[in-house]
Amino acid sequence: MPDVTTGDGVRINVVEKGRADGPPIVFVHGLGSSSQAWEGVMAASVLADRYRLIAFDLRGHGRSDTALKPEQLTADGPAAGAELWSRDLDAVLAGLVSPAPILVGWSFGAGVIQSWLHTHGGLGQAAAAVLACAPNVIGPVPPEDPAAELITWEAIQALAGAAHDGTAFARRILANSPDDTSADAGEVARVAAVAEATPAESVAAVLHHVIDFRPFLSTLDAAARARITAVIADGDQIFDQAAGQAVWKQAGIRTVHVPDAGHALPIREPDRFARLLLDVLEAHDD
Image (cartoon, rainbow, N blue to C red; front, side):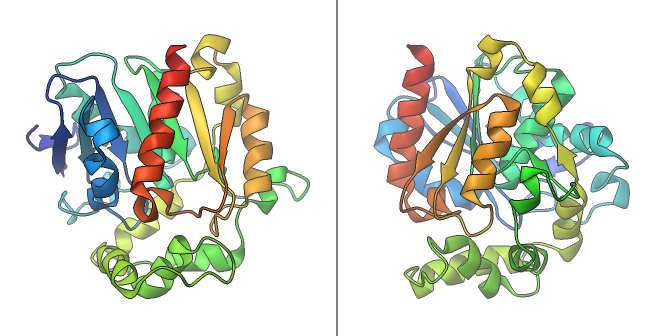
């Protein structure tokens, strides 16, 4: 699949693997990352032998356009922000001939998919959505709201500093527990390099996108909500798993828990994530 251009003129880099005639799965990466985050997952034979696998770089990331105008990165208000971040996925989906794509998002990529769902009023042309290591709300909330416990100040600092201190960012997202240092130096360096290649303006734009999709998701009909799955890594050092469980329950979205795994599950354990994804998709088909 060739590169595509969004409605507001941003060129989006697209990569493809797997079976050209298979059902399409479209992968969306997170903040300070790129389509490289999905390389291991897309190489897994359990998926590549059955599905057409497509990943792309979000605007301001990777090999997509990064020299962007302010209005191509931020918009005022949650709905406008959701519409803006939907444009990249819209452009990729418009290039598909196959119907009913499966949408898989990791971290902020899951926020992009939720933005797309919100903008389109539901799953639309998509067959299913899998939202990994991400909440459905980011931003200021009352202290009694479960979402108040979702992310610590230290995690926010690590995300905000991705373009300036990629190593600290990489170590934080790759950790499977508070004291975990098991990620090898090469893995840390690869993740850090992609983060530091992301313009600071792009990182700031992602963090500017304040969302709360709980009210929207909870109004979807039961059949639609049954085709949306949130994956929670119990050792996630960005988003607290207990708070994540609570906010997904508020939205009426089922969750799958992954023990002994952290925020970067698709990067650190791509084969495990691929098998998990296959299990989720087969459960949807039952």
